[in-house]
Image 1 (cartoon, rainbow, N blue to C red):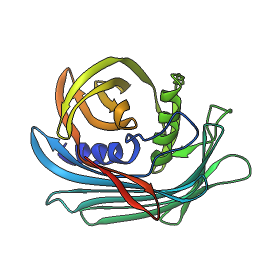
Image 2 (cartoon, helix red, strand yellow):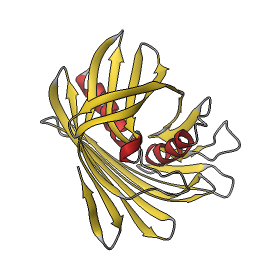
Image 3 (cartoon, rainbow, N blue to C red):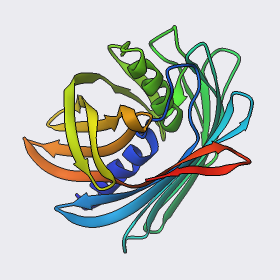
Image 4 (tube, rainbow, N blue to C red):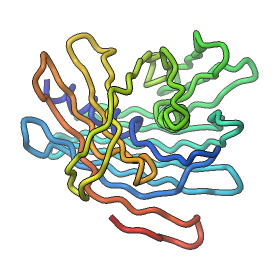
Length: 245
């Protein structure tokens, strides 16, 4: 069970860290997180968003578990046009005990997301014909752009490994959260797409809508959490860090 929890926390580290401005842009940043299970640290994660050129970005995410030989890495490249994320390509690698996996993906001319996982091809199409399929990392950016506009879709679709995931989210209110990097007014978001499991997400508008905490609940009890430990905003790819938290 703990392996499945770590796997899910790693997915959270890849796909629920938000950073966006009200316009069609994202603010480069570096962030570090710690995952907890039963109140004990079980792993860490980091994310770095760089602006490569005008309106083109590179997002790198890493996660690893303490003492279990589990690690995950994702590099995604994308642009934003009219508040829509346009995925260019991604590479994802994972190691779970003695098993290693490597996948790459890019969109094709039909709007499908073509993914190669260890030599096996997959094609994903979104039931939402107005949007193309994204991977987990770039889905987080699209979700944030929608959240900023208060225009959340009834359902979101994105590719994770060899599956097409569907998730729905509800903005349930505002809450002051005392986090590891300070006390902030946050938006509280609920995801109930996983049977008895629900995920609660807190994002801070003051910090460019960065994730402060994600909490997994099962049967009404806290199961695991992902906590933001360090946040640095970057002016641009050349000028380095401008803000430390």
